[in-house]
Length: 163
Image (cartoon, rainbow, N blue to C red):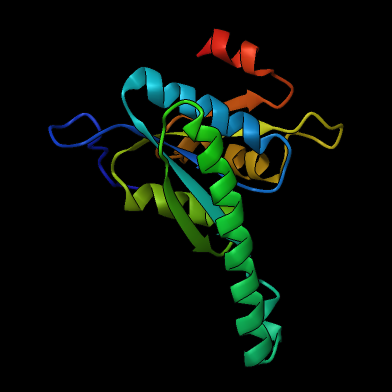
């Protein structure tokens, strides 16, 4: 993981990466990241990962339909995230990648040398913080950038007080 971060060099801007999924707590990560971006004169990159593990078993036409539906769902989710970030005058970059979430998160970070922070939100459920946080925590010692985990139960006012 050798990409040198360049966010604070001339002509660059620090960005945080936010994974946009269908969980309720994803809104918490988007809101926190937007507050961070506004405070640091930076930006955010919203990432939607399309998991494609089942498509290899399908016929080509069915796989194409599944991909188109997944891309449509991804764009709807990214539109919603952009609207949420827009409440703080932040216009996020949008990235859609296919594969496993942890690999695609690292891939997005390696692709953009201006990303300096990954923002995730933890589930409030008894089943644990969520699969992405669990996967990232397993790589924590070798992860290329800092990770902020926002508690999923925080209100906007609580996030405002922290960011």
